[in-house]
Image (tube, rainbow, N blue to C red):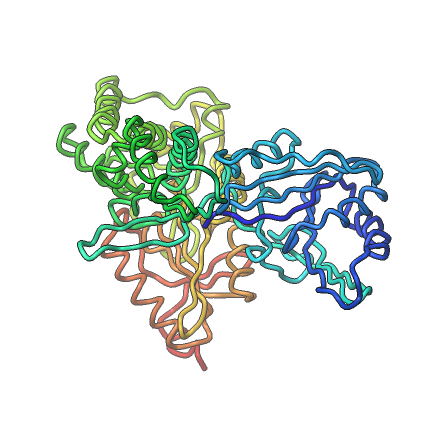
Amino acid sequence: MPVRIAQLFVRASSLDALAEALSPALERHGRPPEGPGLTFIVLLDGPWATLVLERIDYELAQRLSEQVPGEVVALDLDGSRLFFQSRRFTRGQAGPLDTEPLGRDVEAVAWDLLGELSVPEALRLLPLAAIETIEAGQQGALPALSVELRSGNFKMWAVGALPPGRAAEAPVEPDVLLVSAAGEARALEIRRLPAVPATAQLAEALVTVEEAQAQRIARNLAASVDDERIPRPAFAYETLHSARLEPLLQAARARRPWMQQLLKASPLSHAGFTAKCRASIERSCGTRVSRAHALRLELESGPRVPLGAAYASYLKSLDEVTSIRSVVDELQTRLLQGPVPLGRRAAALAGLLPVVAGPTLAKGRAAAEIAGNLRAALVHDDGGRILPIRLADLAAIELDLDEAFQHAVDNLDARTLAAPEGLTWFDLEHGRVVVSDFDDPSGAARLLTPQGRAMILQILNADACLAAAPTRDTLLACEGDDPDAVAWLREEAQRRFEEGPFPVLPDLLRLTEEGLDPVAGEDLATSGE
């Protein structure tokens, strides 16, 4: 839904230093004892901190600016009213109140303002209700303070904060998702405008905002829906002059080619665009696609087909045929060029990754035994193709097997830390289950690295668990104390092994931070006792 934001921003050397500055500001706050209280969260990320409030409090901003050497910047934003104003405070002095005129993309204006200040994206445009607080010091959480001011007294205590994820643009989310009787879905945003005259200039400004926000809604929803198409972005206005404004809006939309395309058909989702590209590649190039993940395809022969740039281009034009044709043409050119050599040592090391493998591998492959029938092999992944590594390839760059695996594990840990959301989990009746969802060929190989194993055990809050790597890309893990959990894991591992792609082993393993051990059938039978 259109964001409602009340935030103060200030530079801080540490959370303790900010708490010291905030205490006298709260003591001097003039909120009457019988009035409503004040509850907010303070988050720190690098040199910037933000106070996330339920409603804007310029007095608190002014009091805080008396205690800190730099500026305090206050933002008051209501996307549903297209309202945004900001104010800066320096050493207790209030600057002018800057208010955006009606008809501006206020979320983008506020986002860009914070970008000019170098405020980290994780702190920008945060509704208080969207921030989850957990115990202080937990991995992945930002250091934070929870603050309550009641009847002239305040309490302040340390917590960890999990703000909502932020992409590199202003957040936007529709008010409601509607589905018509005919099955067509709409992502509807409702604007509540002040009683201003309905003019062609206002309609043109509003449609400019519609187009920018419709594109952001499409990017936001594209990755989160499994259907071929996303709900079509739509906008409605509640204002005194709605009846006069609507035909002016329709005329303004008719002058914009992108909006006209949007009215004809809902945009393809990531899943829809990927599926259409896959079908076109297999039809036109005569090659089989082994795996489709997000906006990337992997061909049976090894080449990878990244679709991110093509999808971004598609969203700008909504021209399916041209965008998909460009993907096929580029791939056909690559296939005609033939295989690309491994390259120099530095490039080779940068792309090394481990993958899980079964007991049978082609002779000469760079591989090592791990646990039971599970083996680890090396591949090279540069984003454009996945190439199996042979022992001869390592010899060509003067690298022994142990050193190569250490580089591969380090590379994989770096990728995991860069995108920890690839390790996901869900809760079943018998406990929590961890699965992997990564854009590289080492989804299951997170079992092989100390970092990956530690993250899995932390998610499960356990010292040991049961795990499986039924395919190259599938990692499954759950606590092994419940017979139902063990039965589920065994059945799910077998199913995924049979369905593929890239089947490895359906065997179950016991995972600890130190490593992996095979689990015998009799151990499974008694694991719940």
